[in-house]
Image (cartoon, rainbow over all chains, first blue to last red; front, side):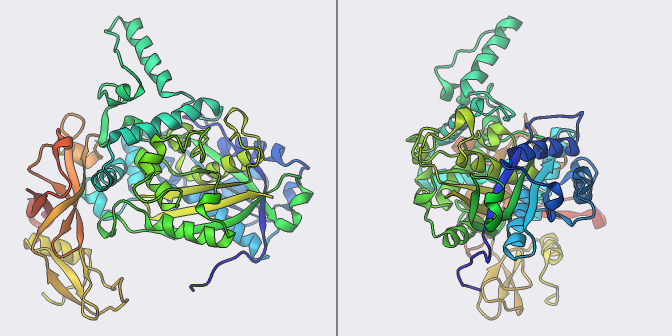
Length: 421
Length: 137
């Protein structure tokens, strides 16, 4: 009903793993999940016995379509030697594995289990780009699909509404892309560990080798304005506004808060969880906001007793550049209409006051759809432990981070807050 | 005809008859397009048909260059982009539709807020005949 929600038992993250993201046609989701699981095992400081895992929740969006194999739960249980324990597949489009995380948290909070493995997986590389678009499109609304909308198109339409309402231009999108790509080279797991400048140089080099005219761009924004370098996909969404097609897997080990110190001296606590649902485009009252994100954020903030100001850094679902701007507003990091200014002012840079997508985000790290929610939480967990290497947020008092995951065209959104104490 | 169920099939049938028909909640008056069987404002299931005039303004749009397979079959794609939009009707509801009569190659010249009116585009013959709601200036 309307009351403030709380977990009956606290939950902590004591381990995590993320497979290197990219395109791996000669491997499959078992390989990706095994890679993430191996890292997770090594990450549990005081070790743990896999026999003590009570249940597994694994998110997957649409491997049914992408690799013609459904029912990934028991395949993963078999892989990990967890048969005959319960394993549940969760599906919420691109938010599938954030739902696995939520189910795992709720299962421990209910008192049912003490230790739960949660994660996600997806393989998209075996399909052509058109097939991937068709598979992802299955998560848009039937009205949008029948009209000829694609995923980028839904976000492109949102961008035009945002531009008209707040006076922003494509330059706002360039700022998001340049920022995310400046973090990516610092993430060894990223699919595109390259800055926008690196892309420019690579293109110049290619032209030189082929003996073609060498393009001259004043700067990164000039490069991104060039339709030859950054062609339109669904205007104003261009190539560099869109996340790539990716393969990968991620997982996290959750235990009851009371048990956390048995496994590590650096537990990360789950202090706020939130999930909401949303309308498709035609039924939205305001085309520049996601009601699902607002509902998820409200739930998580109330549960944690925190406010947007308390969130020191976050991963937000930047499937398309405009989305990152809108999410920051919906999460309360900035006022509505101020997101594009905050990015321009450097608020979201790695060295800014509120770093956003330290991993490089979906845009650069990669977006294996069913694994993304868990991969975002892995990044937040890693940062809070101070183990994010070159992209570590330089704040000696780093204590609170959060992950925002969006499914479909905003039909499912989650917001989860993690804390070091 | 008034006994048609308040669903997508009836909506599409009405489009074939060149009518934009949605639902109005008998209890609270909330309008929906396409029609809804349950009112999302007051949860009533008592609905009546409501005909929309088909006049509105552009609330959002995009020009699509990377098209899905069925649009590629119709000849659209990188060299021939097409426009889709969200149109806010005078009556206050929105519709996602194709936008015709504007240049998809010059999206930066299209203005959110411009007035649009409904048109009907039919394809196929016999039982396969399908009519779509589109908007144009």
